[in-house]
Structure formats: C-alpha cells, structure tokens
Length: 476
Image (cartoon, rainbow, N blue to C red; front, side, top):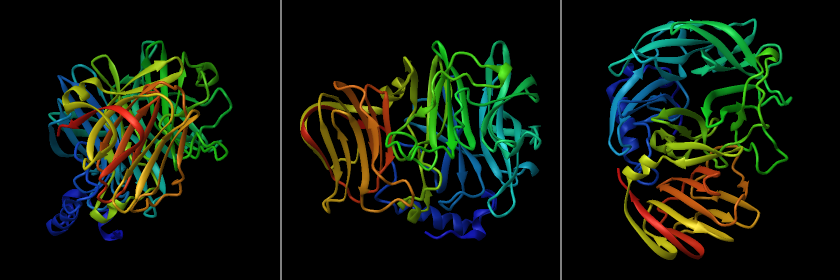
C-alpha cells in the first residue's frame, strides 16, 4: 500500500475511527502471512522491543509502533504482558509522544527495577520534518500500574562530543556503580561509540566516558541498541550497527544493518577503549533480525529482538502491518561463541501434541515446531503448488538460506542468499515456523537464521533424505 503522508505523523489518539477501522480491516484480510504465535502489531509498523522486565512472574514487553501504516513514522510504544507466552494482555499505548523533546517520536529504551520503583529510560527524538534527526535526548519516566508517567529529560544532547545521534539507553552495573549507557555517533570521527553516564540518582546522571574499539575497528557510524550484560565469566556486548559491512565476506555483515557481539573481561576506562576479546561478529545469519534487547528472567539472560530490519518493506504492507517479534531466547557462552536457545519455560508452555516421525515430507501444516538430529548434508524446501519456495541447505562446510524464489519479493537491497560456516557435523537443529517466518537454531544453537518468507498458500516441507523429526503444535 502507498504511504499517506497526512496520516504518518498523527498521534494514535488523534486518528479518526473510520481510518482505524479501515486499516484494521486490511489486517484482518491477511490470510497468507499473519502469524499465529509471534507477537505482531494490531496495525502499522512494529519495531524494537523496549522496556523489557520480568517481575513477580510477569513478562512486561513494550515495543515501538507507528500507527496504522506499515512505515516508519511517529513512534509510540505499545505494551503487553504475559506470564506464559501463551496468553497475552494487551494494554495499548504505554507511550504516546507528547513531551516537547519527543516531538519526532519515542525511540528505544529499557526498564530498570530499583526495588522500590521501576524506571523507564528511553530516547526522545526530534526531526526536521524531512526525516533528519536534529536532536536526541535521554528521558526518564516512572512505570506505575502499567503506565509510563512523569517524563523528564535526564541527559541532554552534548553537541560538543556527539552529533544528533545519541540513543537507546540502558542501566548497566559495573564495579559497584550504575551507569546509563547508550550508543552515539562521535562528533570528531563520525563513528560510533558507547557512552557512559554515571548515575547519581535515578533521575540524575553525569558524563563519564565514551568507549570505542580497542582493535582499531570502527564498527560503523552509529551503535544502536547497545546491550551490556554480565554473562558467566565475561560481559556480553552487542550492538545493532549502522554502516558496518563486509562486502567481500559471504558470511559476515550482509544486512542493511547488522547485529554483532563480542566478549569483554574488563573495560579500559583509562584509554577510553572497550578492550573487547575479539572483533565483533554476526549474531544472526538470517534476513530479518535487529535491535535485540536483553533482560533477566530469574537467573537467565533472555533476549527478544525485532523480527525485521531497517530499510526493508514487506509484502504484508498490502495488509497494513509490518514485522513481528522473535521468540524469547536464553543466552550462554561456548567459549567465545554465543549460544542462543529458545527459552525453556517458553517451550514448556507453548509446545503441545509432540510426536516423533520419520519423514521426507510434511504437508498441509503452516504452524509448527521441528527438532531433529542431523548428520551430513540436508536440503529443506518450503513450497506451494506453484513451486514458489524457500531453500535451506546444510553441506559439509556451510549452512545457507535462500528466499529469492518466494511468491512476493521483499523490498530490500540485501536479498541474496545467506550463508554461515557450519561449526558441527552431528548437531541438533530446531525450527519454529509460523506461516511467514522461520527461526532456525543450528550447530547446537550456535548458528541462528531468523527470517521472514512470503510464499502464498505454502503447503509442503520437503527433506532431501529421511529425517527422524520431533513435530509439535504451537499453543496460542
């Protein structure tokens, strides 16, 4: 559908009911791609997960949302809660951008539980009317009874140190102190950096340091959505990088923007360096993965991500909705390789009717969970009766995914097949398939492909050899 500029910068509570009804009717007409068990917006565009919090047995999940139209526009936050990832309670808008410093929208942020109160930290965005950022500030608010209230600017834009691009704050504890950390574009180099503001009170912060790479790698011109988390014996550091590509490497950094990670033992604050253990590497090899955010669920570090990417428009635009959210993943290390497993509690609650079969084909089933042990080569083809398809291949050296033969094209400059180096011959492979999406965990959860695919009326999954597979339905 074509963008209607007269609607894109209207607050959600100012839209006319006839427009809301018209767009909701378009969403309801989608009989091809609308997910069954992944979170999706009621209409419009969903992107970054925000304000993630697990408290008193409840997962609090906010996400950025542009109302009605499937385009990046006036960013609000929507808010849902769940205790089991099967039953969700939709609370509607948690942020309608009404503060003067968020006149261009409420950008990404996080939640932090201080014990006696929960604070929300996020970025207020201001633009020039042509999509160019002119100022970004960090805002703190109270989270009370499901409402985000009492917004106040706690970090102004420091134009002497940074350009207008400073966003996505999160509280990080290190060596007995708390810091508000966020990504920035440094004014002198026009490259990305990780900014630390030391906390004096939950509403007052003072500038401390800006860290860049210790390995003389710039990691792009803007580091979005930084996450720092103590994980086992080191710190996991991940960013969503703007402007870092490797055009000569088929395995690394091949999206419009790329999520990458490294490990850190300790920071080199004296020299303003990260002191990363290795050059940052791709976190997910699929087509559609961006802006992950972590939070703690009891003692597990859990990740949710935007099941999408920037500068991409999907065939679902015709139905007035854009993007979904990944399933929750629990994180751990295998030496310096990040392991991402579907959250065990999620699987326990959502998977039903588990059966084990030996198959070369699965027919007439668009929503399912698959798990199998693989040795050697394998090709998987998801297709319809018109032979429109998506391919996944495992050979001795690499794993690949190709959606160039699907029914409807994705509007993106990065649609070539995706590749990852195969790490293990005998391995477990797990897949969550939901009408127009697949999350594939390979190499014993060390290689992940997160991808949308758009095959109308697909009805068949073919395997190139017999596979002993565990097949489950997904409860929602």
